[in-house]
Length: 69
Image (cartoon, rainbow, N blue to C red; front, side, top):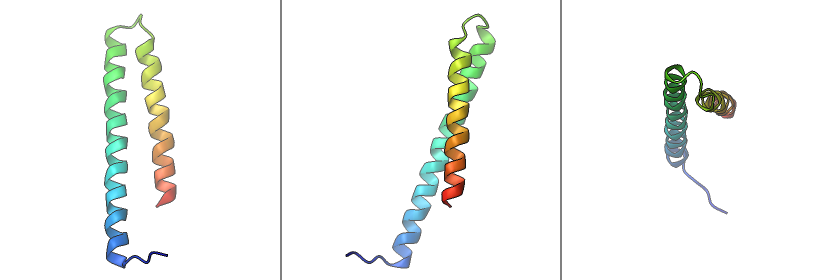
């Protein structure tokens, strides 16, 4: 059985937080990109669909991240 120090656990907690914020930021940037692509090409609906998928992913991931902390 491994026992970890408080500083070790605190460091890894901060690393997980930074990675989660990076994933959320990346998903928000993808939403913005596909939303702009959709506004430029209104007849091509795949950009709208992709922006909705990334929006749902961001909402679900951020909610699970908030509940875990």
